[in-house]
Amino acid sequence: MGKYQVVLTTDRTMMSNHHGREFLGFLATGPALGIPEKLWLWLAAPKVRVDEEGKPVEAPYGMRKVEAKLIEAGFEAAIIDPDYIHKHLDSMKILMLGHHDYFAYGPPSSEWWMITGKEPINRISFRKLMESSAVKKAKEKGVKIIAGGPGTWQWLWELEYWRKWGIDLIIDGEVEKVIVEIVEKALANEPLPDYIYVGPYDSPSIEEIPVIRGASVNGLVEIMRGCPRGCRFCPVTLRPLKFIPLDMIAKEIKVNLQAGVKGVLFHSEDVLLYGAEGVKPNPEALIKLHKLARELVREGPIGWSHLTLSTVKYTEEKYGLISKLMKDIILVGNQEFMGVQVGIETGSPRLAKIVMPGKAAPYPPEKWPEIVEDAFAIMHENYIVPAATIILGIPGETIDDIVKTAELLDRLKPYRSLIVPMFFVPMGVLKHKDWFRKKQVKPEHVDVLLKTLNHSMYWAKEMMDKFYLKGITKLPVRLLLKLFIRYIKHKVEELKPQLEELLRK
Amino acid sequence: MGLSIEDKSFHIVLIAKNSVDHRRVLDKMSTYASLGFRRFIIHVFTDVEKPLYLENMRDIIFNNIAYTLILKHHKLAGENIESLLKQLRNKPHEVIEALK
Image (cartoon, rainbow over all chains, first blue to last red; front, side, top):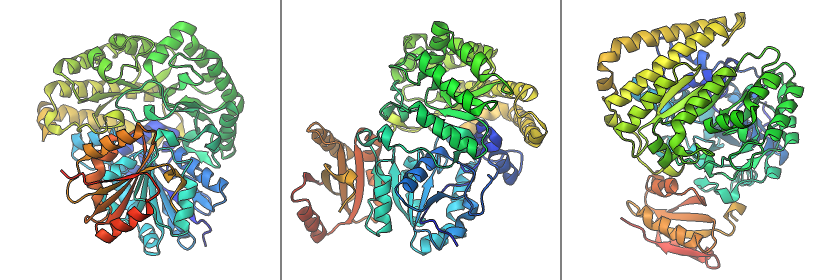
């Protein structure tokens, strides 16, 4: 017999700790290649530990925030693993969904889909959740379904599914200010709007953001929201910038540690801008943040979610702070490296200047390729492994821009990193622009795709040999990944001559 | 009673038969934003059932990033429009027929 009026859930590709390695979660954005779908799903997103009610030990951070807000307001609310929703059918009045990429339209799912012509696993997995008997029964008994999260915009392209599954409300943006009232209205059976976009004016204050009540996936803790750089393709930059105070960060780290998570993964669009004024880092704030984390997690890993390459260069060249943080605080004990997501996006200074003039700051956008190269060298020396994105098909892109990106990729060869190509998906200020279409694929794009693939395959193998997924318990995952890399290499060699034609089909 | 996020909103009553001229709606939003409004509610009167009517609203939604935006569906009928206009009597609103 369940007790929760409000159940928050998502599909397996999101409800997982990805074997403790967030990068593996990206496999869920592609279709199963060379191995059976079930095995692929296990590799990308194994099931999480749950308690007797089906509450996962670790759950996506954004959903943890909503859960905390609702518990704080006095509701019986909990995140429930998708396999255990049926246990709560008798008490459930509202089912809340969260996702980064409901229908695989986001990057890099959409390019995997385009390249392989096969539906990505995350889309299949979400559809299976929505068509599961538990969700169907919930809807039949009048449960209201509310969907939110960063992938919310995709519902506007899937209105048939919206209708078929009986979604009552889609809410986009930061919801802390509004979610309690929405739940009150839904429980009172009052009518809800169909769609809400929470604009910057209704962004919550720090005081309105709750401390999570349960552990987040791999100890992720938000340290700031928003970004001052103003890149035109990025939705995060639209949010007002705010820094989460150290005491709140400490509380969340403790919640994670108490649940058995060993480390902390700082989340920000640019971790090095914590406490900064504008785009210049604040060394004192960063040292305090990392010392606090090290004191709390002791031997556990400290991670960063995202960095901006210009900040990496500036922070090291001006203050020597990257090497100081890495040597003195982060790479102590068992930690040998740190993975982080960064955006190269383009090797063309011209395009950088038009689309992301703030990304190079405090350097001029004309210097963008040098900034990228210098930052990669700094990260390589300090055992920071970037998973970098490049975007193909940005509106206004010329052949020369693509060639410049290819040239930059050649210069990045010596640096330990994964580079992932993405096709332009309209987001942020550019979200009204057209998507990059198959027919727009040019030979130069294919050249860039192959360069990124070769680069990433080389370094992925090297990292797995040296320090990624070490230990006997990770052996099956490591072996499967190695097999997968071998399969992809073989497949690409086989298809190379007709690759351009295949992409355009 | 609406949500408190609906307070101080500007209400746009949109009569949407087939495709909608999104530019006209966005221009109206900009005009009223210049008067200080940061929240907009679009009451969409249409024959297209929900949520399918949102296909015609997509361009409005995707072109807006600055303001809180709430969309509500209403069946296109004279009495429904009249009833809503009565409710909006003391609230800032404008009726738009933004047809292409």
